[in-house]
View (cartoon, helix red, strand yellow):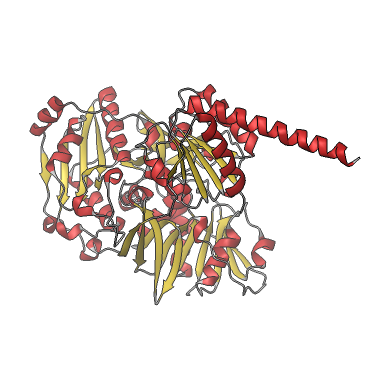
Length: 258
Length: 327
């Protein structure tokens, strides 16, 4: 029986996010929220391991304004329970704060055999929380994993690095961050989402967490966020395919040189 | 101490990391590197005062302990490295141990008073966040966009010391049991002047021939979106353009059958002219394009290739004629 913890984050759905044309800032208030892509891969991988080897999957989620509906969808993929810290004071939390609280939640949820994370969150894209949790809990870490297999007390992980693929063997418990390429997350049906409403979601009050005060204080102060705007001509080429081809060749030849 | 510690996972960008640190007014400059990688001659030209070497297999869980030890001893203000997978993992662990701020994939770094201000892509790569890192030290990994050059560099011979890892308590049980070197194209997309990239609009691998032929005719490098290299393995990973891949600066970029998710488009923001070929008029790539061809790539590419060939034939013929005309 394996205990698997999966760290998830409720993120802004970046593909539907709009920006304010005057301030160029993202309109977060109007955005939709969902679990990040790589964390869906992490849940899927945990559920596959559970289906093969028997175990329990606990979701750990830290954020502000975390919505139960978002958690239900994640639970419906096959996780068993969720531990959640949701507090408006965490609006500007950085990866240090997230890692401290997630490591705390992992202790609350019981001793894990394996902790899974996404390689980076959909909104922050910081590439830090997995390694930070591993350091906090004194566990080995693996990042950018594309294949996992449990072998007794060890996990065998394939990871993508810049010059190839490494196979690592790490003693459990370990913290593994997975890539988008590791699997295709299942889409839970409406029935499964409804059935997931019986699964326990444990909301833990921020004030009940017994950690030194500096562990809740962000080390990064956000100044601003602005959309990347590159001015483009946005010309749709018209005519027959031959005419368009001729225009494309002219563009390549005339604009292609500095 | 007040300077910068350059963590050299490899030495390719060490000169840029040194000059960027020097341009921030940081002094002295230290390098930490695996003992097999050290290039003393390269470092002496940049006024490096010390090179600290270590021995360890390339496993971040271990190297982060050594880095934590070196940072505690040398007390740099800035620990800086290239934005690579192992470097980010090593920095994340060491920053957590020390209680320090860390920022990855930065495209700019400045010093504002006592703090460092960085810019980095967020929200899938469509936005840039400006953040102040308010600890000492800070850990930062840089994208090439952040590299700065500095004119003032003194030449001196660095002291070389090695980390005594006997004093470092290395925990964890982790080893590399196999390493397969990836198939590499060897292409340097980030410096290519023309790039043709393919996406999921291509139905099978053989069909990439069309894009290859177009690339050959116009002298372009081939690139792709992440699913083509990552999920489908149709092209080597070093051809992937996007947030976690190459950021190109081509003067002509042609996107074929690429939908244009923001994770891809951050990689093309510095391209001068963008041509998008996609039969879906609502595909987001058209918003990022200078010129859009709304047509089926399977119908359009053969026509474009035929026209290019005809034109080249004519150019060759003209050259041929003029050569003989001069005689």
